[in-house]
Length: 289
Figure 1 (cartoon, rainbow, N blue to C red):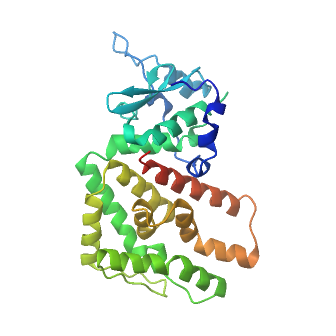
Figure 2: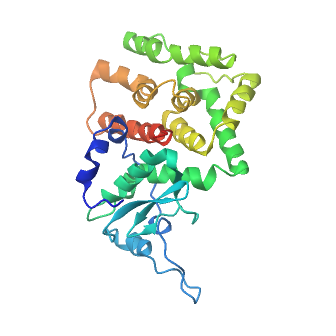
Figure 3: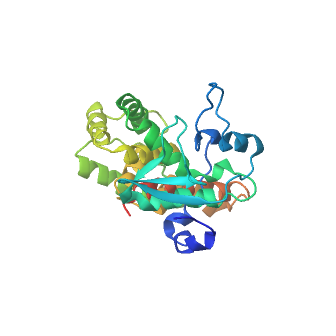
């Protein structure tokens, strides 16, 4: 399967998932994504990606998706993409949408390479590189659970009215869902003072994360870091809410400010799309089509 022209992907590009992608990410180390064999003298491999890192120019002509047993590989001029640690960037056959979105990202790199426009590539690589290692998973779980004590949705304010309304609309249903679904106590507060959640609650939610596969863990990590909320991230990964609902819950305070004072150009509008790109890529990573 080769992508001679982006028009062949137009149905996908019109999809809800595709519209939510394109997230701003940390700078991607391009040379690790597609490599050739190292030279015999042991020097650094003279790869096309090494050249791309220096020139930031597109060097490949075709982007493809190859079936390799029960997995899919995205290729640039027949060379498979690799992760930063050097592993082949392979996704299950059940995640053909993910492979297609990764291929689309690389096909959409035109004259100059834009590392920030590779959200699915980086997220899938994170899942492959880190989320099968139990030591890494344990560290990630501990990091994510710390967000419970300062979770965005657990700190309410009683003024102004638009904020109160948005909190009730977007936060209260999530808090009720967590309490009922996982039989846990969840503290909320109307003060900015720090208040820890019960250890039993953390233990129960940690057990939920332990059952996540590598794709769910990678999506959870990105969603929590984007929203500053363990609860929003969990609801998104478990498909209680979609990416748009997660974004609205994460931006309740900002939405209230905009409603009262108006939008700040090149600030609120940028954040609006950035959050949705992050959460959209997380949601799409969980797809099984």
